[in-house]
Length: 380
Image 1 (cartoon, rainbow, N blue to C red):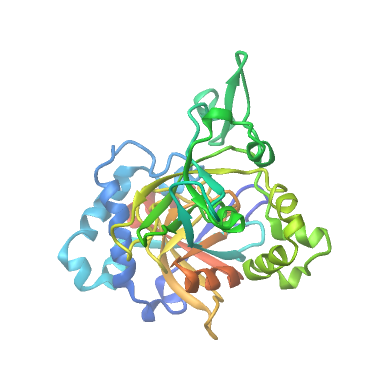
Image 2 (image 1 turned 90 degrees about the vertical axis):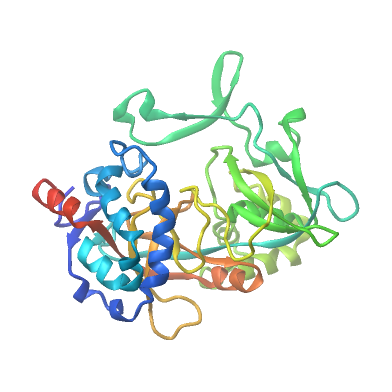
């Protein structure tokens, strides 16, 4: 890793200054601090010797839990809340992130759908959300050979061999047998599919109660964006693809829905819990409730969960580029690249509309504790 040019396979990080971040002085850094504190609660209770994120290859940049515990302790103090800008500027060094396309990458959005469902099958409720099957296993390749990196694979044991887990089409056709345990039944199969894409949903039951379906696992098969499938079929023009245009096409072509959805082999499993606080988002990969407008999904191979990241991107509803401090608290199968982010918009229809329209070029500047940044600069 170097601070010069980025290669096709390895990101690089170029030291910059807060004064060079357009919009830094105008951002509500108090909101960013509150989101960062949620990550700090976990960091302060973790082993200092462990990497900040064991999935992150750029450990020489993000360092260990211990490197972050000092700044996290300071973040919890009243003085940080009284002047969050001074807290970040005193304790962090910004690094501009460079990927395959230099400083520019793709920014998308995601949200928590609110959909109709039931705990029992009947009437319009015919599409299941499944619990994680008992035989689904994950193998971390690094446990077998450090040269294999931080990737993991998923599958199950059959006749003494570890084999790939059934794909979406096979699961839909009953490949799990008795291991298929629905946690809820959904009224609209397309809603169920997009719940898997988003990784969570609020399920409104017939009696008005609301449950949260949260990510519990996935089958490990390749993720394929169905927007890409529809482009390849000539059903949608590339420049017109959005969540809404995809939904409109599926609604107008019900006989082709299953074929199109099953082009995505990836399948997500869930658990359900009562929704106790409507202001909180679902739990992200960091084990923390996501904060609308402040939680960011990143590629964990490059960025560590818990790190503050300055985002510049043209988001829906704004004439000027959005510039704000986000906290890396989630990841996703489609989030691949050093400058690749997924902006969490929140829950419900309005958030869904914004998420579906979010597709823009953007830039990252990651913030690293100054003591860690000094060590990294000496030995990049």
